[in-house]
Image (cartoon, rainbow, N blue to C red; front, top):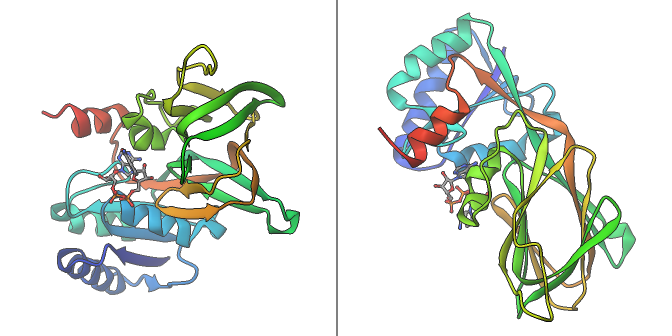
Length: 264
Ligand code: NAD
């Protein structure tokens, strides 16, 4: 089996990264930076997000597992003390795969040839860099509302515990192949009206954002940011692709939610 170990880059994570690499090489596994079967990340959720984007061209062949060297992560749910147990599992036992849905984002520019497709593990956000964002929100081909406010966040179920949660969105179980649209400070008065509640769309229901004012937009996909004035539309839906996590022990989603947000 071919593996890679990525690190957040701090000293603790780098040391653990080297230890895991040595263990797995001793077990006879092959280090392969380009085409790993398993990607082990050491750091936090951000480290796993980076690794997802590094290897998202080969999701069907790659499984991910995350170790956290800081606080408990949603994707990084193994602790450094468990590393020996984890590497033995990786080397010796066939692992179970758990698949989580992803968000597909297609950004169309005034110049059609510059259209781009992205996959997000957490979310896509759209904001205006100056003043309010004014955007038509189409759902399944029909105009649903004209949004005016700070911005919109379209998240995956596993991303629902990240930015979406801070916006008052619901936490969705990742077995629900869906996307969630959450508002950022919408303006609601006698002139402007939005639904005000987060919306959950099932597979095959597309959400199309068509910005109406000619302002510079800031679009984020997980941790990275794109800035462009010439965006015609942003189309979001559940992606065909899924992320595959290697599971070596049960750690139910709701337990992770409880441990992260409620505690003991
Ligand atoms: P970061 O260093 O700013 O960390 C953001 C925090 O979000 C970390 O504590 C991380 O553990 C947590 N996080 C990431 N994914 C999560 C998930 N799926 N569920 C629960 N918590 C999660 O940035 P980063 O580590 O590069 O992560 C990027 C993410 O930060 C974005 O995808 C976005 O979800 C989140 N973010 C949140 C807010 C907010 O809550 N107001 C604002 C901006 C970005």
